[in-house]
Image (cartoon, rainbow, N blue to C red; front, side, top):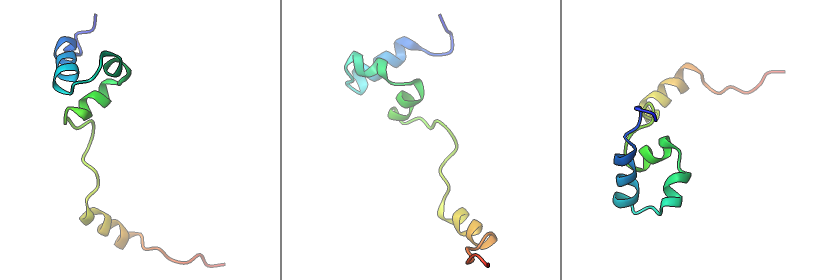
Length: 65
């Protein structure tokens, strides 16, 4: 048995908190369940300021032939 996940706690959160049917719960990956519970599974998405910065650094230019 893995000590990595609190399965009783996750099952309670998924089936009681999110009202998932057991089949739905067990079809989810741990990452999907954590995302449904509001936990970030990775870095925050890029914001507008970063997109603008990249657009300035790498402007779109027509292909020259």
